[in-house]
Amino acid sequence: MVKIRLRRVGAKDNPSYRLVVADSRAPRNGAFIENIGHYNPQTDPPSITVNEERAIYWLRKGAQPSETAAKLLGRLSVLERSKKE
Image (tube, rainbow, N blue to C red):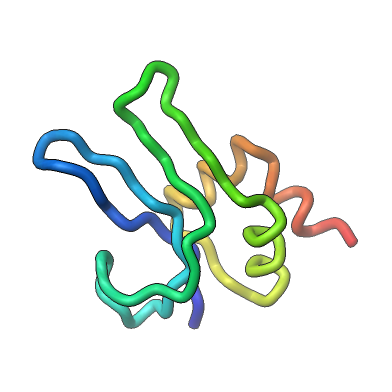
């Protein structure tokens, strides 16, 4: 199964995350299929950047977002647009 999830990058005590499409069996920071965005919770307000076109593509192909990824995509209303055709 293909999942959309967060991959932790950044220094110790200074996390930032990449939003990636990966096989569900791959480790958190292991191999991934495509990098579709990034999330930095350290900024005020937290910055979220997503390639919406690619995110919608993967969601329509059946990729399942993790709980946190779904919240981030929901803030940008990507999930709603992926359901429309």
